[in-house]
Image 1 (cartoon, each protein chain N blue to C red):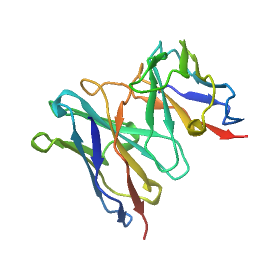
Image 2 (cartoon, each protein chain N blue to C red; image 1 turned 30 degrees about the vertical axis):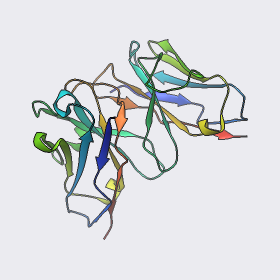
Image 3 (spheres, rainbow over the protein chains, first blue to last red; image 1 turned 180 degrees about the horizontal axis):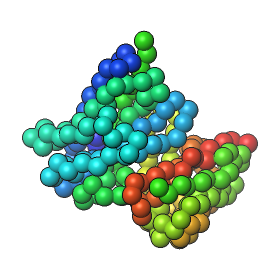
Length: 121
Length: 107
């Protein structure tokens, strides 16, 4: 069945970068987009960006433009989210979530387990 | 971007009672609204999509309605496992956005 497995928790210093992976199982990886959503402690869900796993096209929230890079490795059925210039308010759980065909606004039917990123000096 | 406002922030109910959660959009999202359930320490789970379609494996006690700017998630009879936080999300406009959530707690 479909499931998404993310990399583990990370602790980073302010100004550093973090790269989170999301490996997909149980479906044709290149047929769907992968989205990234984050959740700060005790807060709601915030959409960050997506990648069309088929052609590699990306779209980002304006909030993260210039700091966020989504990539994928089709041979490994894995998507990556890299966030740079980390600040303390980037401390959050980062989720990957499967979207639709292409990087379009869609609902998210499968989610990874989340990866906690803590930014602290 | 479309702002989604969920109400109430917290709903205190007993098992067996009916729950009605509201999601209001700042502009029309047609029927392109989804609902998610999130339990502590877990990822969100898709419950409903396109306002009224249950996702795979979701029990029939969950129902969704609405279109345009006003939507409702209904749980006909609360089970113990239904006490959680619920989020709505729209996909009609770019970027996709989420509501702030409604916590359904045991009274």
